[in-house]
Length: 69
Image (tube, rainbow, N blue to C red; front, side):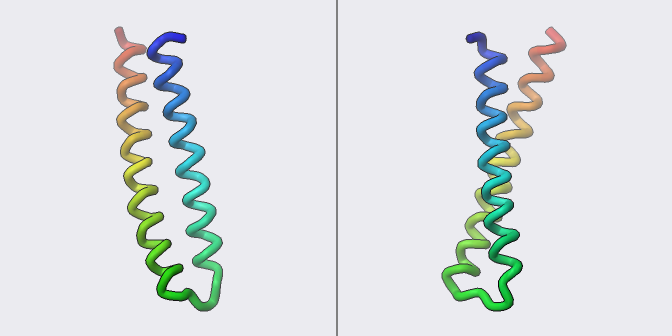
């Protein structure tokens, strides 16, 4: 496996994690009442989701640079 393939695999893994976090956030937001723990969970998930999104963008940029060379 070359570096581009492993980078693509990492991107796909992050994409899956991002989707799982998004589904969990959406599920919690559908509730009419959130406990303090659930509100805290949403806050943490949103931060993690943003971090993973940044990782995905960095990997996408790396893949595009590799394609140009």
